[in-house]
Image (cartoon, rainbow over all chains, first blue to last red; front, side, top):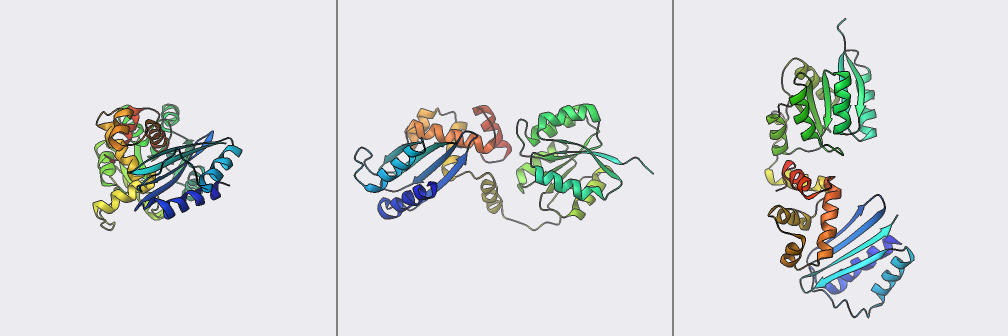
Length: 85
Length: 211
């Protein structure tokens, strides 16, 4: 499930962001897993989630009672996902 | 026969400790009296057992190796210290020398080198890497080091901004990121450096020669 999420996010970066750099990291805490995906691409309007990809990710995260925060502007996008253990 | 050299191992990695134990078991002139999981525990054990030698890991919870070494040298100046570390970083090795640490070995050293180092420091000498090791450029060492801690470029950038005294909000404005993102970065950095407040974060970053 987490693999799928990361694949989808990676795909988004490759397909849409026009980024030249991206970082994907997972940080393990005692009570949660944190996934942080950063890129330096052109960003997107987070208020208009039209694509199926992000909706899919969101529903997967909901299923695991996690949260996803998207911080995006024209200088890049940071997506932070927290999944409780 | 002389009494064996009493050694304490301070390392939070169980497999590594077990490996050391196994390795030193055949050496009748050495005995491992205790194992400590972190710096604080080590200081308590030293007070009780008065060892001859401490094999010290740098990256431990609660009290890191550098601070631990400083305390040991202040409080128990006759206890010898060999640091066993994965960090092949000039500034850390320099720091260890300044604190009067007797030896510094990389964790990928051979059994022979460890025994030689123990022998040297127990006879009052120092054992440090560099004299025989291959030369690596500073750049390589730094990037290798950052890789060890798994800090990303963004994270090292944020560390230096925290050090410059900027608040999370300042950093957020400067990097065009949300404050939530900065807070998350900050937590992740603290998790990676095993610290729990900003002062300790800066200190760790300086100890590890990141900034």
